Image 1: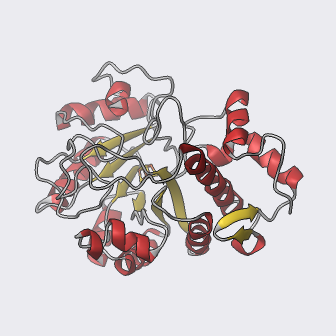
Image 2 (image 1 turned 90 degrees about the vertical axis):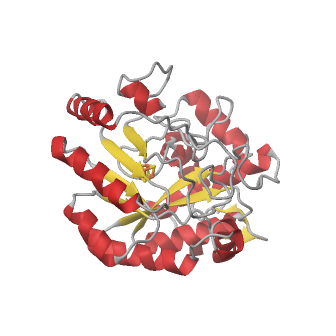
Length: 326
Ligand code: SF4
């Protein structure tokens, strides 16, 4: 919906417009996979104009591509991100969309998709896909199995996703993944996999799990206070690891809860106050405004944080008057 607003195809009130155009390939068939959090899943009864919180309204392809070209050339958009569901003609439809965009426009394209064959990765590279993203979504193999693998009635496995990431990285030279927090993982589960993926040169984008009415199961069992504290802790640890400031082995955990970030309190405070750690993570120029948020709770800030927002981040972390000591 925000993308349609930037393209001038819908009236949308936004304090921060998206800098990436988010395109979901529309089909009335439900996805053959069964990810428990997703509105498109085969056993879900949620509205199919959603994936998670974002709303994807069907629109005329030619009109969208023409406006995409204008918006990119005029500097309103810096990237487009294509997502698809698993259905019989998903590959043909995805190739058609990529080629249609590429016919008119040089905008960088991200494609977020389940693991593919090596030949398909090579074909996508030739079609000038700039960022290939394979969403793991879960932080551990057990959670993966429960939310999108065999136990969830889906076709995916942790092993094939990790294998897909490795094969795609060989062809694209880099690869991305998404991790969704709030599915029952501990701080340590999340930080451990972030450290491992970062070591394998995988770019990690964080999402917060959002329950969509009609999707299968509500994984939110913790209080809002605990959910946001966990999210901020993992955002900060991810930033420290990905910027090479601290490593997983420097950090200290107690029963899965992060107790020490492994850097001095002065450094930690200055990093928190810069705010970058809490901005949207992922492909270059991706800000995903309101993808997981409500007006009362922002998980990923889609722009530079204000002083008031930094104060509220410190409150979220329980750091109003205290920074964990190294
Ligand atoms: S990080 Fe943003 S642009 Fe990249 S795949 Fe995820 S949503 Fe798309």
